[in-house]
Image (tube, rainbow, N blue to C red; front, side):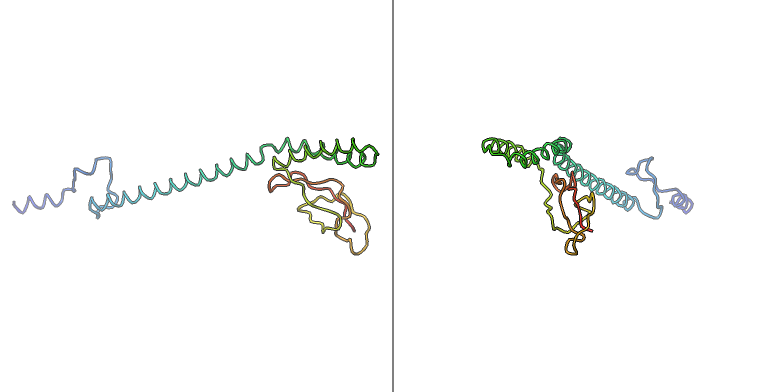
Amino acid sequence: MTKESTENIEKEPLHNENVSENQEITNPELTVEEQLQEDLAKEKDKFLRLFAEFENYKKRTSKERVELFKTAGREVLQSMLPVMDDFDRALTQISKSEDEALVKGVELIYDKLKSTLVSKGLEEVELKAGDDFNADFAEAITQIPAGDDMKGKVVDVVEKGYKLGDKIIRFPKVVIGA
């Protein structure tokens, strides 16, 4: 080869059969193999990120589905709460009567309704007179003057509260001491 032909070869851009015409070499100082390694690393990174994102999506939707199943009957259970309140009042009044069979019959029906609702995840919020008032777990409907020992405490529970799983679906309504 002559000196002139070697100068022409050096001036011509490198062309490799492995690199298609659509691929651009972003860094001309890298060899084709180094460029392919860099592209492969970028694609692996994209793949790993996409895979992680998909895994997070699957976990999130699974968690949402479980939560939906836990609270699917929430509206139905909330509509049954006034019936439970009516049963409580009825039991209070019927227990004053002399008819033991009537009291026993109403108690059996009440227990059956309550156990059915409990099996669906309904729980009563435990709150009684003398407990400290916490606005996160109870709703104060009024305050009454009370002794120093009952200030800021629950004096009376007017309406029971219920929760479904970990969420309160109805706050107990209470009277607190002032």
